[in-house]
Image (cartoon, rainbow, N blue to C red; front, side, top):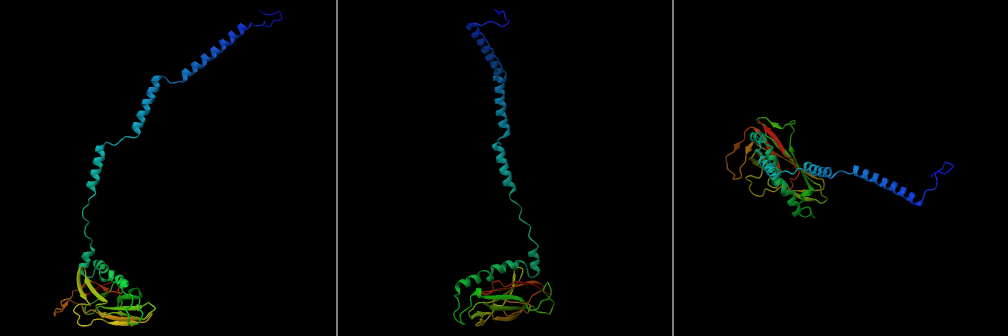
Amino acid sequence: MASSTGHPGAVSRETYWKRRALVLAAFLAVIAVLAYACSPSAGEEGQQNQAGAGGDTEASPSVPPEEDSESGNDEEETEPTEDPSPSEEPAEDAEGGGEEADGDGDGGPDGGSGEAGGSEIAAPESAEDPCRPQDVVVSFDFEEKKGEEQQYPAGVNPSFVVEAVNTGEQTCTVDVGPEALEMVITSGQDSVYSTSHCRKGDTSDERQLDHGRTHRYVIDWARERSFSDCRGTASAVGSGWYHAELGGTYSGGADDLRFRIG
């Protein structure tokens, strides 16, 4: 009951703890209601799980085996292509000298012989010893330049100049004979002329070269076909493009020449 001063009177211990228990119970009830409101229901949780599982499935679809198989077959079917149409260069070579002969020249005596000889020939110790291929530089060119496209009119025979220089320190011997340094003339796939055809006796032409010394000589071609069987009849060649190259142990690095005769 209230005191005479207007202030509430003293509360008994039992009433005090009852009030504290009611306040605590009310507080716990509020917490429980809030927790229930924030947590999803079982149905919503199941729908979310199903939606998550479905999303993963849609994000990484697997390709059916049939599609893989069909895709592989398509690639195998489209991989083979028709044979490429032949280039026009062989046709041009058929008229005369040709680009086709360039490949033949690389595979001929120019290619492997020089390096093979380099491994077989020892370093010279005297002037009579053969020079090593790596110590000899051979150049091959037209004797007379006739513009960008080398052409010889009727009645004018092609002529070529060969130069061999010893770059080694030791004086040594180089064979510049028609067989050791063979000049071959072709027209497309047709072998027309060779300086080594139908030679009798000793065809060597050995030259002793000091360091830095150059030996120069000229080869004339009379526009006639040569034969390895030494037949007696001469056969003149027709007008067109031709290709000349050097072969032999010391010919590595020499240029191939293309020209036309009228």
